[in-house]
Length: 215
Image (cartoon, rainbow, N blue to C red):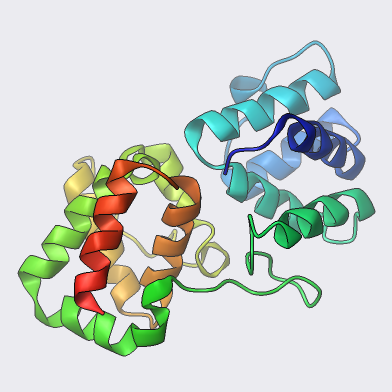
C-alpha cells in the first residue's frame, strides 16, 4: 500500500495518538512484528521515529500490516480507528480489519471458486509448483522478513508457527503453500495480501493471469 503525503502524516499522527511513548510504540512493534524499533526506525524524537517506521514499512511492503498491527493493539483509539475507516472508505484496505465496525478479511478473486481452486492445486503438482514460483517472484514474498510479516495478516498470524522455515526460499514458499492449502480459504487470504502489497507489478500481473486459468 502506497500512502499519499496527507495519509502519511495522518498515519503518523494516529500512531502517536495510539502509542504516546517510545515504550508503547516499541512494545507494539515487538509484539506484532517481532522487530526492534530502535534498530529499524531511529529518530531524535517519537514523531520522527514514527515517521521513519512508516517509511520502513512502506519501503519493505508491509504498510498494510503495520496499520493492522497497530489497530489490533489499540482498536479503540479514535484517531487510529478514524484513519483506518478512511482508508477502508477509499477501498485501500477494504474488508481488512478484524472488527464489528470494520469488515473481516476477504479472499482473493478466486474465493468464489475456492473449492475448485484448492482442489486443482492439491491434485496437480505442476500447477502448484507454478503458483509457488509466481508467488515467490512477487516482491513482498521474495523478501524473507516481509514474507513472514505478510503471513501475520492471514488468520491473525495463526500459521506463522505452523510453517516450517527453510534457508532455501523456494522450499520455504512451498511449505507455506502446502500448509495454507490444508485450511480452506487461507491461501486465498495470502494472495489477497500479496495483491495489496504488490499492486501494479509485473509479477502480480503474471500471478493474476495464472490464477484465472485455475478458476
